[in-house]
Amino acid sequence: MPYLQRPTGRIYYESRGHGQPTMLYVHGFGCGGEDWLPQARHLEREHQVVTFDLRGHAKSKAGNSPWTIASFARDANALRRELGLKNVVLVGHSMGCRIVLEAYRQRPASVAGVILVDGSWNTLGPTRTFRDSVEAAGGYQRMERRTFDGMFFAGHDPALRAALLPRALAVPEDLALAVLPSTHAWDARRMEETLASLRVPLLVIQSTYIEPPMGRQPFGKKLDSPYLQMIRRRVPTAQIEVLAGHGHLVMLEAPEKVNAVVGAFMARVPN
Image (tube, rainbow, N blue to C red; front, side, top):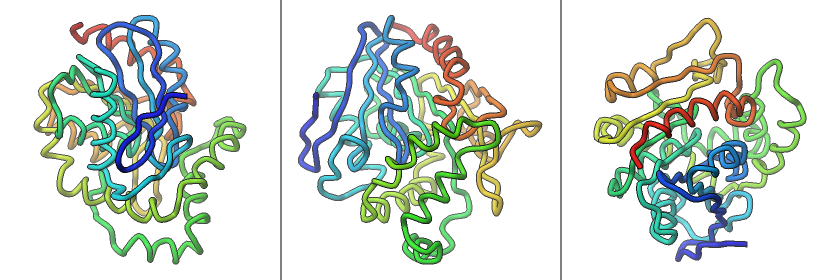
């Protein structure tokens, strides 16, 4: 199995297909590179497609800290260099949206486009420490299970949830205690300025939105959110596609829809 050895840990990755633009996919917290398999199989006929597991997720070792959005972005950029990826479209889901934006901020050279799949924007900031939230929920495993349950809605395939939950619960607690607060800090300090700095095409695919105190909600009649409004302000040229009626893991719940939107976007990115 292919691994990238980093000073901070060993990273599992897969590369398939050939052709430019190339694509690098980054998953969200508690997930894995295999979540992109429907997209990788669809697009590998025309593009080199690279997926990988973030440190502490799936087949990648947690390694040494720091576990932050910035350090995960450095891992992604190290993989870009290792594989010699040129003219690359960075694709992120959930927490991975922050990672690909930070990867662009760190190394914009050779990036041809950015795709954000069901990202979010924490505008309120943490009201208490993450450790306090864990204790209030009755422990990390219980809190993570509740968060994971909130990603799925009526009509989803229960077998999908059952298959993915153990992987989410396997993420080390000390890693979670570091990286999840880092997402809030990155949102406050970097999100808007990084979006405004983009000089490449941006595609945003959105299936849910966060509505305090209700939590994550699926798009239905409502087709807008503060996150999408902020993206329109910062990137007026962004292409925004709302896929209503699906949960947070939309690339697995509705792969044909996601593939169609991503495929059309990739056809417009210069080789």
